[in-house]
Image (cartoon, rainbow, N blue to C red; front, side, top):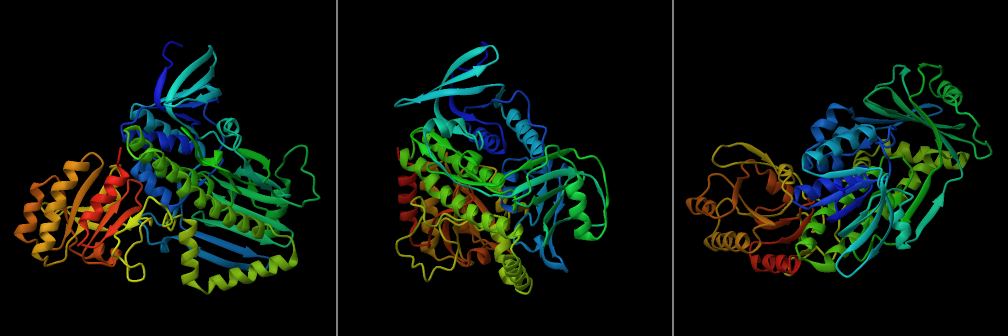
Length: 546
């Protein structure tokens, strides 16, 4: 009991994927944080499965992706069928992304890998620790924690509720959790199946009698099916409904083993009215819950954490103030609201029983099968690669830039990945690798033959940015081969030089010269042309002001 800490900078309530991802990123930023969870032991159940392309980038930054990949199955396709046979398919590898697929990895294994990474960074996780209540003061939050040996008090500067759908933190803040519950009942089973369906794909059977979703697991399959509204759930669960539905879907009853997990559930759609009250914030399922179809919930919670962590770190060092913390809700709540709507439509149409609705759904899917560009847009949305914060007060562009004339990434967009090269060694470096270093990156892009004033401007920023914002901003000069001697001299400053010898950076940015300030979460914070280095400095001063 004496080892229980009396103070920490950030108290994270909940050791699920959202809370542990936040904790890892905070440790990467050097922030003192404590994670507590009311459960005595980690969950044994697989729960969420699918990890989308954008989350794979985040896990790469958290340095857990390799471990996850060893325990996962790679899903490269989605197949949908109706009563008449194949209806629609989607090739996930067509995504323009570093990781164009879905990793199927049970949530309990995801949590174990995240916990191991957090502990390796010196993190502290206490299980069997239940938040009783808390009160906020001017400079801290005081929390009471119930442990097996007695209650303890703890003070923290900030507290984050990552404690799930029945969040104690959200309830004690008095925040609404508005939404609805679907009337259907659902069954879920994780089970081995002896059949010929390819395990690199998910399979959706949209039948007139009901639907069946089959998702690949590292071992076996997950089956999800709906029951009729007037069908009361059985007192005892069995595999009989799945066997009947499978026989209708594929014309045979395949051999199945004993289920590792068999449960029933209902689908809820809810969104917290706010994500912040003073020094207490919400993330993940504590802020939003939805249908499991589309595998959006866990991915959205992890993205919440990635957006929030760097803002907490800046705030703790006295930068940004309440405006910075407010930007978290302003940026992430609209994402959740849009996601909830999309998943609700997907869920209701996938499990539709009305003949009219099923006919309309199948017509739409058949149309999508003939429209690869539209399918690609939907795929990017599902993978969360197109999530943006364009409306955020925290992002901006130089005042002289016209939105209609600006062809490059918009402020708030996820900044595109590109391969460039280290000038001395020729080693290839992906921009994705820079996300492991949770700082802002200012890319100063020079054309092949830079003019004298462009070089002077680059020199001026190379001098000012490190000296004024060194801890939080890293400057990278992006140039083409061959480099002029004057550009080589920039390397004497506290900056990096990368060579865009194949022009990939220029193509991705639709520009051969510009200034791009990328946030620690990989989204573009500020964009300017080569004439507006002063506005880049002004933006950084506003962002990192005390």
